[in-house]
Length: 119
View 1 (cartoon, rainbow, N blue to C red):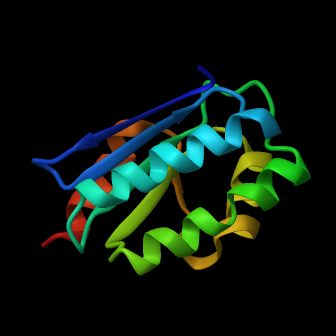
View 2: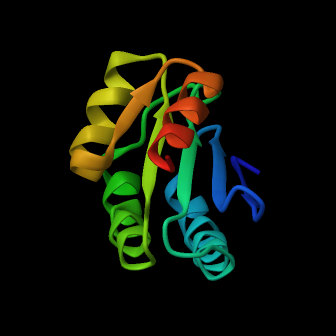
């Protein structure tokens, strides 16, 4: 599987690890994302870790995934952060998801940022 998606109900958070998504992977990703949204309460946070992905998203995959940002906002997004250690990933996430595309180089820094939003 080119991604994992886990919901932490205690933290009201979804954690995605992307390891290289293709167009064929997007339908299952969106299906899992919709399931995750149903398990979270308004104010939830999310982390997407792309450090294990060998390449950035193709323009086609990026376009197919773009609605997930709107879906998250509609479900009460409290904050989302990307763990990305590549400037190209950072540019792509900013272009895809706009102002809520915050980046940190490590998961620990990303999680600390999201925890600071809940204070």
